[in-house]
Image (cartoon, rainbow, N blue to C red; front, top):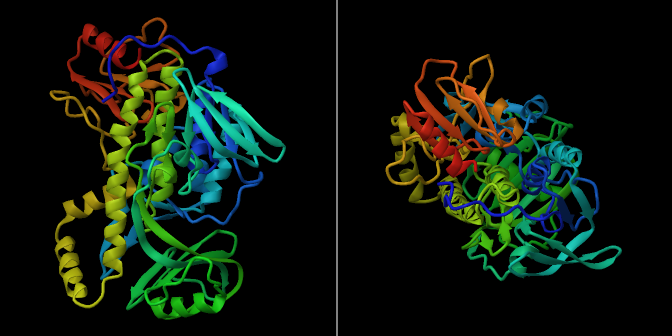
Length: 489
């Protein structure tokens, strides 16, 4: 699961250890902040001017993303700003209960993407990330030692050199285009309308969504008095550039929700189409893709921003380990092996939700039967909730490995009153043992040792991203040393 156990690479020299992250959305910001906190020089290229736009499409943080943010000491700050939602109401009365999640975060947090970006940008700045705004990638070339990125900016063109480049620059990724990766897929929903509006009548629920006939509408609060409206009408299939006004938003909302809640004063309206696409590879040489640059899907389930944050959490510690010389470059191959199947699964689950929500004709009784079956199968509902929230995914493990290997590790209670995700805040591996053990000399910068709050006898090595790298029952000191040498370096 953690890649080959070959001799770690020689540490990269400072001149060639830089990582360039393209894109300053949530994925790029989390990744850049992680790398800078680990002592890696990072430059973020963003084609927009400085200033985070509040015209975001993402509106929820799920449990797994919140756990990753907790490991970076920012989840509680976001919890204070957002609003928790414990139940997801889908269609035909089907409800998924987040209150049963095996997580500290037993809810979905309704919060605009720009609030997440503000917190992650501040963290990245404090860690020393070099931001270059109004700087777009016009091309790149790579060799055995690094990548040269061709940048066009407000002050002219320049070439920047880095050890690795990560494209977190969205669906129309310039990085993906530069390395020649295709983006196969199709448009799943065309002519989706978005608007930010004031409402004279407040909805009864935090998130309001429904589909009736050919119309679908979704309402969620920004927290500043405005609501985001996302709506779609099957019969109005027009290009993205076709004008849209508040009357169209009101009409579709009334058809789907029965009323328009007194919509007025739209500060922004737009039209877009929702694609289902995934790059066949997330890596070409020294160039990686993450977030929407690697995969896009329908908004159903609110999984887009969350999946990108988890991409970043998976990749950041691996890049840091290789650049510091603690791991062989082959570790980076596990990014594709672990995250590509998750991206594929998200495409399928979000697509299934939106197709069921927009069922019509003979599909409606089939949907009703499916919902009735799911109502009686709590384990299946829990599995669906695990996929939507991200807590249900695990990574491949070697044959014969302990059953915990590759699994997401929940927020364990540790001796002394601590929690696992507090222990992960140093960006290090955490070794949880039932007995006395001290980190070996030379590993304190990348390994923390903790002990179970209970009398459990398992020895568990947790990766910086919160997944189990190795586990054993009644482990001997020699077994632990061997595991640390293989995974921590």
